[in-house]
Image (cartoon, rainbow, N blue to C red; front, side):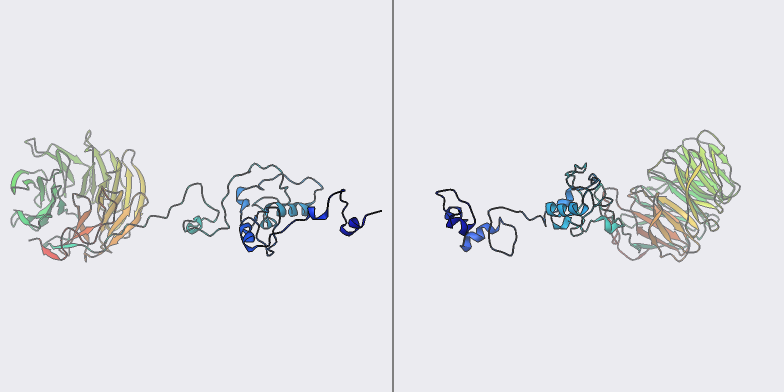
Amino acid sequence: MDSPQARKTGLNLPAGMSETSLRLETFSGSSSIRGLSSLSSPSKSSTCSDRFIPCRSSSRLHTFGLIDNASPVKEGGNEAYSRLLKSELFGSDFGCFSPAGGNQSSSPMSPSKNMLRFKTDHSGPSSPYSPSIFGQDSGFSSEVSTPPKPPRKVPKTPHKVLDAPSLQDDFYLNLVDWSSQNVLAVGLGTCVYLWSASNSKVTKLCDLGPNDGVCSVQWTREGSFIAVGTNLGQVQVWDGTQCKRVRTMGGHQTRTGVLAWNSRILASGSRDRNILQHDLRVSSEFISKLVGHKSEVCGLKWSNDDRELASGGNDNQLLVWNQHSHQPALKLTEHTAAVKAIAWSPHQSSLLASGGGTADRCIRFWNTTNGHQLNSVDTGSQVCNLAWSKNVNEIVSTHGYSQNQIMVWKYPSMSKVATLTGHSMRVLYLAMSPDGQTIVTGAGDETLRFWNVFPSMKSPAPVKDIGLWSLGRTHIR
């Protein structure tokens, strides 16, 4: 028969053992409860147990991919039981979790190739650098995304304006050039004036007299001598520091509208359709004649290595000449209007840019090694001048009919960096400062305007509105 003690407790106790020895004592003090509260799982009940059961609701174990690509449940398995087991093992928020493309019935205990591989957590707050900001909704890429660089700001107004009386509105002339010694030369009527950018001093270089006129000016690369093309077809060379004429050379039958120096050769283009090459070390007036254009030559530029000469004409042709032949090495005829604007890239060899007149309006880029056209951009108006920046891979163009604007382009994307307006007539003349940051533009409205458009070579910081000179208008003569 059972003893009265066994009937009372429902336990079979060995002889000599009382019920009190098995009693589990609880802590009643508040300090003991606070001391254990940090170890126990959150619960509405204040009763403490003898086991530590961690809370997995905030552990985010799903970010370690513990259940990705798990092996399928064996045939006949209990799917409801598997889901219940997942919930008990990994927390309540795993009860409905299923990875993209995964199978909800996969066994959580099967080995996985993704074991302990950390994944992107999409449940947390979005970061300001989240790819979704940039249109990517599929999570982070393997590389850290950085915010796009803000576009460079270009001042919209000129920081200096010079009055230039009698500056001609003639598309085929080239009357403005800026020397490497920071002196600007401008042809006004029958005279050439020099304006020092460092102290704003104006000097009259020469006066050709009532029977002649200035059609082109061009400094040597060293900036000491300047060539002047005249309406009578002469080419005069002057010492810019002493204002003395050094040499006068003939050979053209009519006006000399464009000049181009390389390190030792001066090329001149004329309305007589010919290009003459002059060497000051030789007593003859010219050393070679290049014949290829069928109309007036209005554009001439030497390549940076002096090996090629590009010429543009009113016959819509762009010709490229080399030192070994008197025949053009390339004849590029895609333009449909006069080609005055020509520029060689200082950043890439054999890259040539050219611009067409009113009927063409396009800037075209060429590989002069094989003659292939690389790109063509319709600017919407007559292209009068082109100049590459030597500080950044950008190009500036000036325009005539019908918008009279100045445009800065990023190469090779040809996205617009800036569009500048201010001239009331065609922007026929363009020159760049020695540091490559400032351009000067001239037009038939008889003004020269100075614009800060390019950053310095050392620092890519945006150029400032306040330039080297004070704002306002000054007379050049």
